Length: 578
Image (cartoon, rainbow, N blue to C red):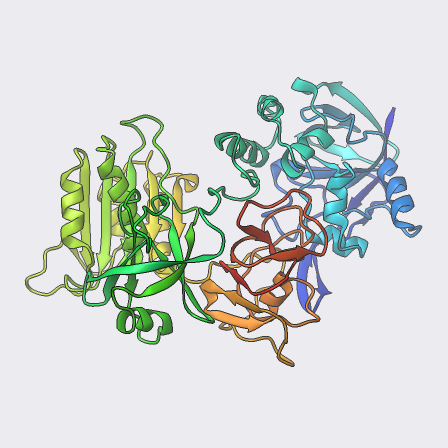
């Protein structure tokens, strides 16, 4: 009979870690006497980051004394105390390779259902003083698991744990954990896991994303948005064939293979990265038809933009430019059927470029889908692609358009004067079952996303693209005042050049730096991460050029053309989509 050996709770607190303040509830201590278990928590307990922990599906975390003994032996430790792994229930029995998702247990007067394995993050490494711990939990098949509370009630140390129902499919916690995090991902077992009603929605979404990719796909679509591998490694020269003005501030640059061969097709919405001279590397969205023999990027001349000024004033037809292969996950999704799934394309300013490529793709397909083109610009002179868009919309049988001009001139043609607003968007009757694609400045996107939510478009069907650095993800870390990316403090490094393309920064690698993620943080380059040990793939970043070594091999390799920056170091010059 399994036994509850300790009930552990802890209120989130601020902990100093690597010079940063982490708000976390991973430190838990035993409760003396009964503890009341409620739908979302145990009385006296809390989580510092509700995005990754807590909630109905993760109300109670369970870890086993059998795993305690395993880690004491493996790590050579004898200092463990109850709650050492951040668990609420320390139990004797219930090993991860026997407990199944969907199993139900009675403990004291409460009733529970197993919903998912632990999602490992760096904070268990903090608590254990062992940075490798997130990866080790997966590699050793000992993640622990979460419970949903089906009936509230008091529990206490010493209570028997009684199984009252078996989960369907009989898939163990360690088996389900391995399906997501370890190499292989057999599709028949993923399909089985999706037949378990108790499996939490987040894990169901990850497994559906994995099944949506072809079997030949590489990378892990359950952890990071999947994209096809780059059509060529690093940079190759392409010839400038034409430069065409699209508005008073935007010009298009057409690029072709120097030998006249067709270039590999890009997906509608992807971008190209160009290297104009050493250290001057930028990415620009493709705006032309995805199946063209050449590429077209459209570039706005920014007042202080070094690269945009270079392209507008120093590049001419006949020049050769180093170009990396098309990349990006902001791409047009296929329709459920030829006439279903409306498409809403919303852009502000030069944000029209990637959604124009999507409009080209829909027109080339002669799509019967309902298509909405919503465009915002300052005035008619600054609005790009006016005639091109009109021609494409005319070729679509179910097209709608609405143009916002914030400062229209007397002879401009438009639908609404003023900035694009949620109030006007809400009057357009946008279909709630649409796939929406939004590209524009951050403030513009905030307005649009709120309006789409009010229109009933689910968040999972809204796709966004931001030019420049993407927002960082630093779970549990208290936000610091914003600072533009910069060279790291201290002595200048003497290693290979590291280029952060979206942040307009190139710096030499400092010899004492532990990883590319550490360098990004030292430069205030926004980065996304969670485990910091090569298992969660949150830090997976496009490796546009160069090669890396890993300080610890990733648990599951990243996609071709990508790198896990949390544990990677450059072996030569590298260019990162960061």
